[in-house]
Image (cartoon, rainbow, N blue to C red; front, side):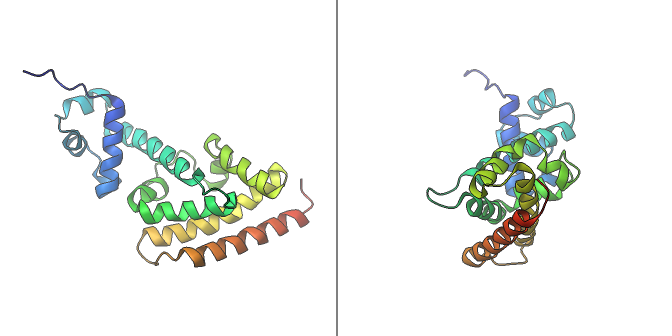
Length: 190
C-alpha cells in the first residue's frame, strides 16, 4: 500500500484559493476544499480550527497573488499605467478572486486610507513615486485618485456590467493619472 499523502496547511490554502476561483469565496468549506485536494475533511479541520481562519488565510494568499499580478508590468511600459491596467485586468481574468479581495469583507484594512498605509502597498507606491518624481505624500494622494478610478472600472467589470476595452481603459487611466499628478504638483502640501 502506498504511503498516505501528507496534506499541509499551504496545500489547503492553495486549494481554498482554487475553490474561490471556481465558485466564489462563499463556497469555501471543509468539504469543498478537501474535495479539491482529494482527501478527507480531517486535514482541513486539523490545520484550520474554523472555516473563518481558512478563509482569512486564503484571503492573504489571494492578496499576494493580486499584488504579484499588479507589479508584473511589461518591459518599457509606464509602470503606473501598467499597474493600473493590471489591476483592472485582474478583475477580468480572476473575477471571483477580485470579488473575494474587494467585496467580501475579509480585508484587514477597513478603509482606503488604511490600505494606502499598509505594508503590501509599499512597492506600488514606490514605483509610482519614482515614475512621477513626487514626494511620498503627493504620491499617496495621486495613488488614492488613480486607485479609486481603477477600482471603479475593475468592480464594474468583475460584476459583469462592462466589457473590457483595454485601449479605452488605458486612455482613461492615463488622463486620471496625469490630472492627479498635475493636481499634486500644484498643491502646497509636501
